[in-house]
Amino acid sequence: MKKILLFIFISLKLFSQYSIDNGIVYIYGRPVTGADINSFEILSDSYAKDKSHVYNADRIIKDADPASFIILSDSAYTKDKTRVYRLGTAIKEADPDSFELFGDTDFSKDKNNVYYAGMLSAADTKSFEILNSPYARDKNHFYFGNIFLNKIDTKSFKVLNSTFSKDKNHIYYGDYLNYGNIIIFSTADVRSFKVLDDYYSKDKSNVYFYDSKIKSTDPKSFAILSSSHSKDKNNVYYYGEKITGADSETFEILEENLAADRRNIYFKQTKLTDIDRETFIFLGTKCIDKRTCAEKVSFFKDKNGEYNTSEME
Image 1 (cartoon, one colour):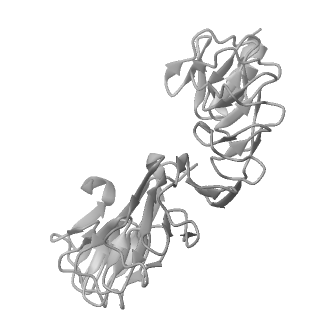
Image 2 (image 1 turned 90 degrees about the vertical axis):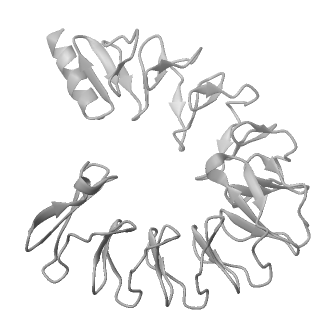
């Protein structure tokens, strides 16, 4: 019995979300209530099962069958012999035998329906195709996620990227992070509008960050430096907000939130007035979580001391 528990403990530790203590399985510090540690099996970072139940993190997936339960290529979707699930909740209408995903998107279908965070009741399964997710179409309609686009000019409609689209009358901005918010981008000029990347766009008069106009920009000289920084001949911007006093010509990015020009050092939008520019030395960046490197800390020094960006949050 001790050998079995030790094996389970080691196996669980390979997946940082799960742990075991005193015969109880935990995920994110919460107990997986009722889990049988002798039959407990981890399927992914957020799914597990035992002889009686299937778990999405610490939650039992109601009526899921452990023996036939599998995770599909997009881990948000799973199924067993009788049901399909999205994020641990059954999609009532879905047929598990014919259910399939549309590649690396949130769209899916079976022999009867198309799904996107729920069933798209108007969609035609045979002609349905992805344009640039979450934009899609079938023989009758265009869609943005689960929104049926019924006010566009279908003959001239064109998808520009995963966020922007247009027809002869308007530019449209789709906020796919909020599942289903698409607006007419009324400030943009349809003829000269150009998508620069997933975050930035411009027309003959303005530059935009997401759906917001960046004030006082020069579209002709505008350049994207990184996902966080951009500039034109006059100014430097951090996520679309002007960095006061930054010198556009000499500005350089050291890491996502740390930058320098010939006069100053900047953290995000803030000028670090206590740092001596002449003796400033950038020491490098380290990952807080070495496995994912989702968060980073940068280190630097000047004649007065050593610093890191975690002290500035």
